[in-house]
Image (tube, rainbow over all chains, first blue to last red; front, side, top):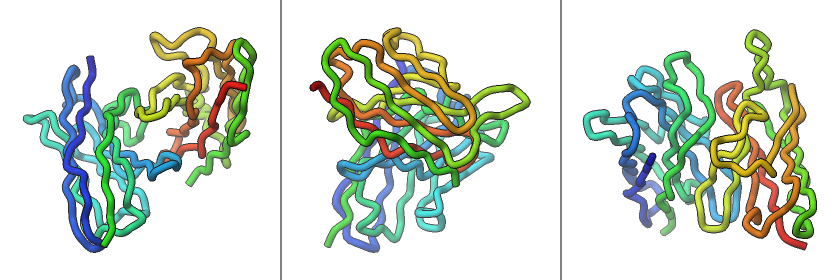
Length: 124
Length: 113
């Protein structure tokens, strides 16, 4: 069974930093692209970043480009999101998701597994 | 970016009745070389993460009840719940993966009348 478990969320002041982690199990995560999708309370879904299977393709939403960095450690079957210069509008539940593809063809596919999410609150 | 517009924002349907959700993309998500529509549907129950229901516009995921069906092509898509059950109360999202960035519709909340 595919499991994605996020951690690292919390309360941070505007301008601060957080590093989110996602531990993957139940599948060979090394073969798949992975993504971060966020959802503000009571709002819709926003894709924010994706990484291909070999880290050769990194992709970001305009809203976070230059502030957030996605990475993966395949030896640890883990996905990360380094978030700097945080703003109030970054407050959301952050989901780790598994892509149905590897990203080797330079595109994203649908997200066939989701974690439970980790909550980030940016406030003074 | 491709804008995904869902309608209605919410609907209330009696148990056993049909629920229909619409999703419209601002440009076609049909990739002509393979005749595939790069469109997925997700169900999000209260307090839970989204769950993939449908990929490629009409392909139901394993384990998804057959009362869920989806259709459409190009820019206009429909998700249908043929006979609403209590456990179908949720928010439903469409998602295009035709081009980056991937984008989602705003969601449709389905409730029991």
